[in-house]
Length: 102
Image (tube, rainbow, N blue to C red; front, side):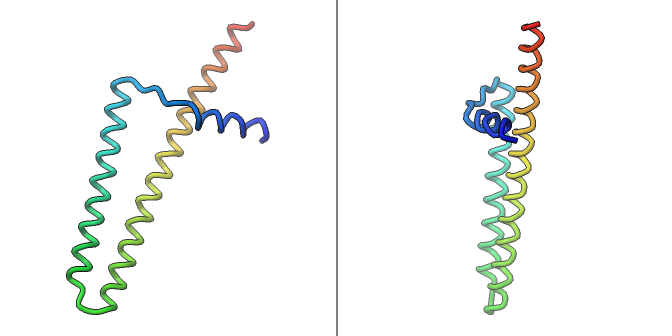
């Protein structure tokens, strides 16, 4: 486990070099995430604006919290996927380097 900690630290510190396709995918994903956030905020605003009683405002608050939690989960999953891709890429590079040494 101690050997993995520096590897993970290195992974997080390395700048992500991306080609044009990767840049386009990253830009698209960011745009979609922003659209999702805007949509959630507009929905929350509408809920609050239409609330007539305190109980309805509490319901809006719960709805807002659930939307934020869903966004957090999506971001966590995306980070996991990206980290897995980085690990896989580095393992391939390491294997190539090891084979060159032999």
